Amino acid sequence: MKAMIFAAGRGERLRPLTDTIPKPLLEVRGRPLIVWHILNLVRAGITDMVINHAWLSNRIEEALGDGSRFGANIIYSAEGEALETAGGVVNARHLLGEDRFVGIAADAYCPHFDFSQVKIALEDNDVWGKPHADDKKDMAWLYLVKKPPYYEKGDFSLNLFSVSNEGERPYTFSGIGVYRMAMFDAIQPGEKAQLGMLLRAYADKGLVGGEVYRGDWTDVGTVDRYEMLNAPLSFER
View 1 (cartoon, rainbow, N blue to C red):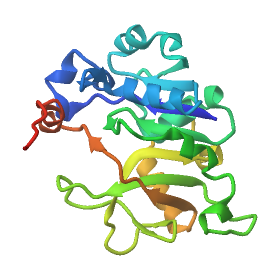
View 2: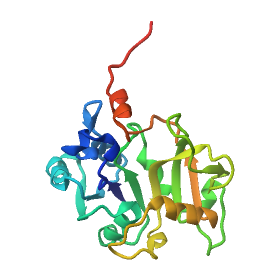
View 3: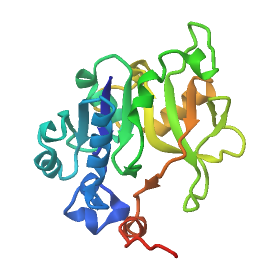
View 4: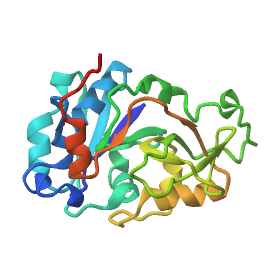
């Protein structure tokens, strides 16, 4: 299985930090955000990775190189202008191949995520108690987290491993998911397209599965959240 790490975003809400440093290279607890993912992927035996980039792309390649010092094999997918997540996948399709792959948002901080679990996602839906007819298999498997207090609304609801747009939607998409490449067929190379809209469309068809991840997770989307994660740890006696 290959991994794609989405690293092309500008990080507007993290300015002025991201004026000179790409968001994926911002350090949390002494390590760049993207490196947390790389090391966790390698630990799970997923070593072939595609990283897309646009903003300050040279800084990302200089920092990570070919990935060999992490035990990884990194290939870059350059975007002159960021194509959004789904557009980025299509731009990198020739590097990812046609098999299912795991996609990861570079700005999500989840230091203990065990990527070994993604290897069985979408392999056999019956394992997860969500059988489908042969012509109606899930196109994506999402790892959801309980909606954090800094989000006004959640993204999805979840019922017996079936992701839905309906109801209260108490869960937020973690930015980690497994995808079949066929779900991107309608997007043209060079076209900007958001993964979120695509997932909602497939969820309406009952073709998105998922589960809840209960480990540490933070969307490092603002300066306040970034500073909170790097604040000195305090221990009460």
